[in-house]
Structure formats: structure tokens, C-alpha cells
Image 1 (cartoon, rainbow, N blue to C red):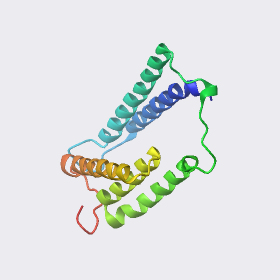
Image 2 (cartoon, rainbow, N blue to C red; image 1 turned 60 degrees about the vertical axis):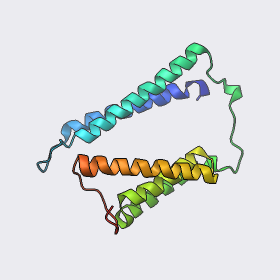
Image 3 (cartoon, rainbow, N blue to C red; image 1 turned 30 degrees about the horizontal axis):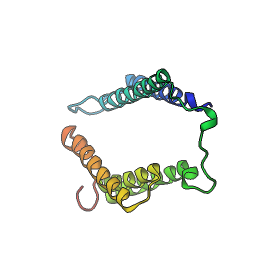
Length: 164
């Protein structure tokens, strides 16, 4: 695929995925009485994904309007043997490890470890300063997600031996 259309295609794919998530919520039924409907979280996720997809497409249109889309011949190839080449495989391994750790050490700690590793991997910057910054972002994200679900929505989240 030509580099100049990658953002447009990515935006369309994210919007389609958001639509699929939203459509899948129509068959959901509540098994217990809770304060929020079982469709709330998937629909919010679909809305956020839709907005991200629209944002990606708007960025592409803006760059196209300004004439700054990359040309195919300007594309920079990864050097063989770099970690970037194995990022998808490493990501799947990290997800697998995250799922295994979720019940053993709890949501918060396993999410902090996963996000720190994944953000560092995707940034491809393995300096100590960057890893510490990624750790801080991961701690903040895990705590906010925990508070939203556990306190806000009153939903059970896997807790580790430390109670969080």
C-alpha cells in the first residue's frame, strides 16, 4: 500500500471496527441488575474508536491539503535485525504474559507492567529516562482505569495478593 494513503485506510478501518463493536451491543442482555447497562462500556469504546478514526482521517486530509504527505520513494525502511521488525510478535507475547499475570498479581500491577513494556516497545526508545516516563504514564493510566471501573462503575476487577 502506498505510504500516502496509510492514515486514510487506518482511519477507515478504525471507524469500521467501531461500527462492528456498536452493532454487536444490540444483542446484549443484562443477567443481573446493575447501575449501568451491559452495553454502556462497549458503546463508549465504539464512540472513542470512532472519534479516533475520524481524527486520523482529518489529520490525513489536513496533511493532504497542505501537501505534506510522504512520497513512496521517501519511505524509510527498517534495518534488518532492529527490534521494530519484531514489534507485532513481541506485542502478542506481552499480551499473553499480561493475561497470565492478570489473575496472579491483579489488574493494577499487571497493567502497569504491560503498559510500561508496550509503550517502551512502541516508542523504540530504551533509555532509562524514557522507561521511567513510560512507567509514570502506566501508573497513572492503571490507577485511573481502576478507579473508573471499581469505584465509578462498581465493577469487579481482578485484585492481586496486595488488594489492588
